[in-house]
Image (cartoon, rainbow, N blue to C red; front, side, top):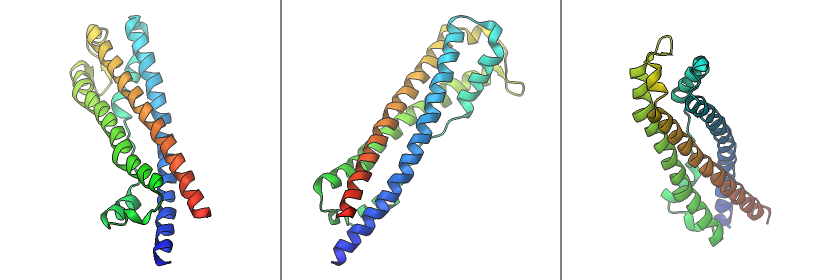
Length: 189
């Protein structure tokens, strides 16, 4: 009976953590979708050599290096269960495997995807901005460098990185919602 009560407490707590994750995944997915749209518009302006839109281009470049946020999973309950050796308290094998898959695999893949994006921004985009922009006015010093194919290729790579993250946000979200439903079904019994 004591084990049953403890299992229910853990499941309620896991459900609460998943609710937070679902909310945060929705938020990050929407921010990510907005960034994909902005970077796509930037790429179009670069590829059409639209130098009349420098204010818009500068704005997109500025947003690309400033507005970067990443998902942080609510792992408190899962880590507590794992560290306390209590993972076997969850008797439903499928539920247990889904939890392990979410926390140990899915979230790690999402983190790797976000890390690749961050590295491209920090190691490739920021150095170009620091070298080619007047940071105070945020204006390009040499337009030719901006309309060079290499910069367009970098923007395209960032769009691909963002798209990869979008895939993991959606996949993680679906898994969280499914596990949350399973937990609720267990608690209702």
